[in-house]
Image (cartoon, rainbow, N blue to C red):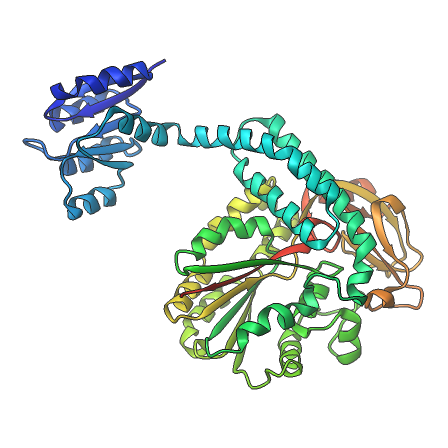
Length: 515
């Protein structure tokens, strides 16, 4: 069936060759030589696109656009005109036209514009499917041959790239292939972590980890006169960062992007305290015995981050920096931080911890409305982007860019969509996190977890002499036998963190500047 388009031009009779060409390409063109008649026709008939001359007797093209938008607000309009005056172009673009072509135009230009507008998404999707089919084998080989942390960073980045590229396709079989490849990658990644994580904590051949992030990645940017805003978005995954990245680049023109690895457990209590303290959890407990809280203790586990940060900066020779720390837990305080921008813009380092995404991931479990909205990683990414576009945080970033502040964006850990339960038996003091457990006399399926028998070898505190840790791998979650079926139904297909997966452990570090 031909695609119906309307072409309005006072010299319509001169365009016969264009109509013949478009007809051969599957477009049925209705021709009108004035805007008034075109508007009347649009009241009665639907078209897929409108080609409109600007300079016509009577009603001009620009005047017609406003009336057409009232009748057909979603009709794509391509302005085709001899007029090259910049103010005409700006006014036309400001009227939300789909394209602007300067006469003389050849038929292929028209065809390209129509395809871009009417078939662009379809063509992009088809090309992405073909490209992924070609890339599949190479990625499979990279997964098989990955032998160091940089290899795994590259594998994960490629898989996320294809997830985003293919997220809108209707080809369920292709999506299933991609999901299976990612699951296979995570299985191999978990084996890699089990084999190498201990060595990372005791040797030099390691990636940047939570406790070395400020020393290795942040400190080099604190040694000049440029004011720096460090934004720690709790629970920000690499795929979510890629979705919101274009919004940042509206205000900053230079970007450097790296990855780093969360420590285990990949949870806020452990990873973010380690990030600010520059120490591993057991070292924090020894240095700050009154501030560190174990899993079985009451109270907020991250109340002393400013103190940890100050101590860390002092050990790094940066104790003279003027610093300010904010933790944003709700929109009201977010607005307060925005209103206080003038008070901290001249500090050497301002740290903002932002908890919205972490709250959102937990709401997927606790709130039925949010659970319906976030069905999978695609909808999780979309909601993250939509939130950010309308947040006070974006306004803070705009102000920071205007003041030429350096912006560093990172996180403490990611999260994973858990699907399969694995049963764990423990006593009443066993920790409650679904991706790791700390406790005594734990019973579990050894194939589903990474067990740490001697926590001190992994710089982890323990509550009792016989305490051990187990970490969930792949997309499993740890479930107690009591009320097992109810528990599984409640937590299946939710977002959790604390265990081992690429999504939880390989996380973004980004620096944006204006140069």
